[in-house]
Amino acid sequence: MVLATSGKPEHVDHYLDLLNGRELADTWVTAEDADASKPAPDLVQSAMRRVDASAAVMVGDSIWDVHSAAQLGVPTVCVLSGGIAAGELREAGARTVYADLPSLQSDWAHLTAP
Image (cartoon, rainbow, N blue to C red):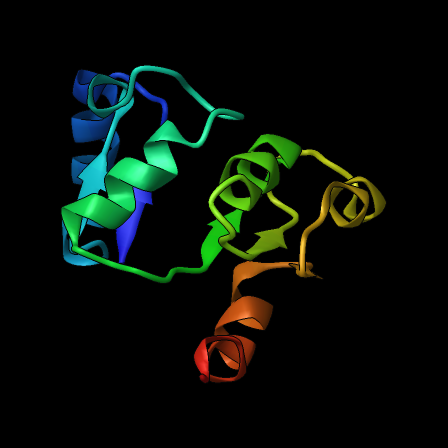
């Protein structure tokens, strides 16, 4: 699992420590790892390169997440945590929209099956 955020490295470090995120993500990429931020695909591309992935699933909460991943052919599932309506996320191309993280977690095996 790779966290791909357009946040500044020092902010990301702070929140990773605050939320014990270093235990959840295998690695992360920040604004320093990309030339352009979302909706450009740079962060998703950097995340995939970081773990040498040829396929991925983006989990996001904004239309910019959906657009950036779509440029690389990466499907996106969204969680309603970013203040964007489910209809807007679906219209942007989200494969599925979940009300919360527990709902996403209960369906994760289905999403990642070949």
